[in-house]
Each structure stands twice: as C-alpha cells, then as structure tokens.
Image (cartoon, rainbow, N blue to C red; front, side, top):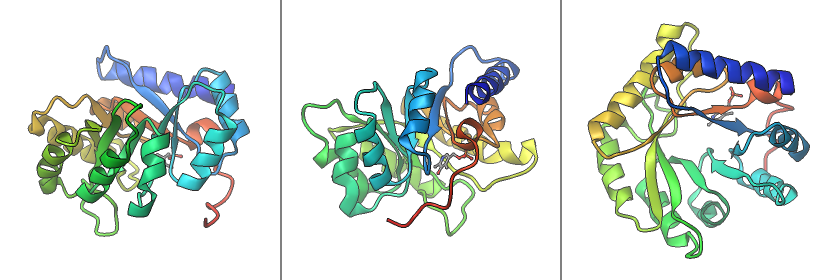
Length: 226
Ligand SMILES: *Cc1c(COP(=O)(O)O)cnc(C)c1O
C-alpha cells in the first residue's frame, strides 16, 4: 500500500503542477468493501480522511478505528430513515441531493458537535438512473440548505459515468465548477475525481478527490447486501 500511496500522491502533485495550482487537494480514501485493517494501514501511512458508502459497514469500521483521529465522509446514497446515525457519526456528507434529507440531517445533528459539512451531489451528465440533483435545481437547494442551522454547506460533488479520454473526463468536472462559480455562495469544496479520472478533476479545480482502488487495490467483492 505504501507504494500505491506514493504513486497516488505523485499523480495528485503532478496534476496540481499541470493545473498551475498552488493550493492543495484533500485525499479521501474510499474504503468500501475493505476491512478495517486496510484502513488502519493507510492511516499509519498518514491518511486521515476516509469515505464510506454503506452505513452499516461504516459504523463497524468506525468502531474498530475509534482510537484513530479520522475525519469520516459519508459518500453513498442516503435513505431518509438512516439519517440519524449519519448526522451523529460523520464529519462530512457528500451525497445530499434533496431538501428532505438535508432537513433531517440538520435536525438530528447533535448540539455538542460542530455543524455537519455537506456537499450537494449534482447529476451533471443528466443520466436518469443517477443520484444527484439536476443542475438547474442546485441554486434553489443550495439556498435552502444554507439556511439550515446545523449544516455547513461546503460545496458540490459529482460522480460522472466513466469516460476514457481526458477531454471527455474533464467535461462534467468543468460543468460542476462552473455551476459552483455561478452560485456566488462562497463554497470552498469541489468533491470530484476518483482513481481513474483524478487528473482531469484536479485540472478542473477539484479540492477533494475520493480514491478507492488506486490506494487499496481492487475491491474484495461486490458489496454484500445488508
Ligand atoms: C467507490 C467510490 C469512489 C472511489 O472509486 P475508485 O474508482 O475505486 O477510486 C469514489 N466516490 C464514490 C461516491 C464511490 O462510490
């Protein structure tokens, strides 16, 4: 894993240089299907941000890694009856795509914790099957979310369909950045880019990349249904 992390860090650094950027990119290690020991190995190499898609799996790993100083990101689909543990156990949620979910997360965020950092997941490519708010509905949702007292709206997230060439990869990321800029809302986060397309995302301004396989290797199996 050490070699994969070094290689990944080099890819991120080279993309930042190519983009002539002087800021940094946060690496969120996506641990779905990986056991807690694999996350701990990454932690020991210095990784501090971890992302999970499935609540039950995440809660088990959080318990196993309770002694670690980890920032936890929830990046998967959110069912409205599962918002409470998400509001209590995570620092960030990237996959907010409707007001009902945002309201519940705000209402259920414990008083003793700082406001929950959230990104709105946007379906930039407009695929009917994909999660995410439509681009033309983002402004309204963002303004409503900003009024919720226990949430802190940080930015936008997208998960585009895989594309092979760099130009095709950049298109949805560019749209997300333009959308963020058009909101004029002081949003500091663009959560975009994964193992196969993080260079394209960084060229378009990603501040946070979510990386699974390039760090942990191939996933174990399809996720067991829980
Ligand atoms: C699995 C997943 C990732 C990481 O994907 P890799 O291709 O393994 O890097 C990032 N974001 C989300 C939302 C995911 O579900």
